[in-house]
Image (cartoon, rainbow, N blue to C red):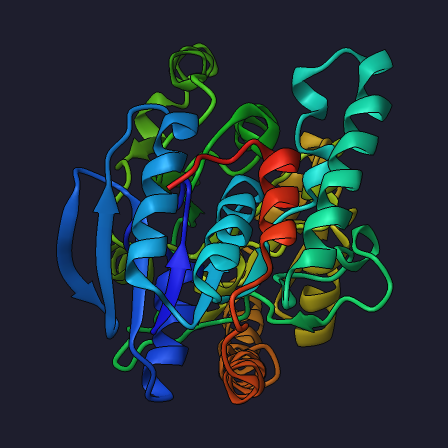
Length: 389
């Protein structure tokens, strides 16, 4: 059995379950996602069994994840956050499972926004040391996007399994029409994801342009957003529909939206390296995208696929000019068609899934560790202060 281990990801997470877990299950392996929740099993998702543990805060639930992982005795533990990496290494040491670390972000810079400038280099250095140590202990490291390999030691088995487009069968496609443009913002919303610049751009652009938000504010800034929209006279042109399941969100986007938005703001390394699901979701339903030129991963795809307009995301006038350009139906049709095809070709998920499956075939052919030795287990305990089972 392959165990997907999450300290924070939800039971039906897009990457962990619907992409990676589904690919492994389709290849014939039994796959379980062990993650936070109310406790106990949930209905399977995409062929993946779901099991949840309780434990209060993120830190407090780690012992429960460890104990359950050991009890399940998987052949491989695939962990999706740095704290779950440590739990996976300890559980693997106990039960002989091979361990795969899944790297979703540039973790050394993750705390930058919460720390004073003088402390950031210290925090980055400490996180890099921890990542190098854990990478050296793991059997493989999977990278969700380019630019993440440098934090792991030479000799680490690194495999790129990038977050490319998963296109469900029967996914609807946008039929672009003349008339006012509706902008779409999918997923997490926040000030550093560009809502202040977007509102300013809407105030500069065509007065009939609308905005549909399918997602949650993750930084507590929703009251400020509503106040700013009202002050700018935009409230009547904006719908905050909240979070909804991926299938429902894409169906609504295909029915109502004309342009997909990615407006990460400069200043965060994870924004520069971003490879968000929302880019590929928009491509998959035929929406052109407005995206930041500084975000190297996103910009390279937009240029290669010819599926959108790159902007200076910190400049509302640059965003407004892109919105005005995409008011032309012919432009939306051309760029949307390019993205639709790219999501089913070069930038589709199947090639990434094949790399993941090939890694697992190799790992499972190597068999279990004959119980990682007790000295190794003790070293992991001392390093990460993980709980005993």
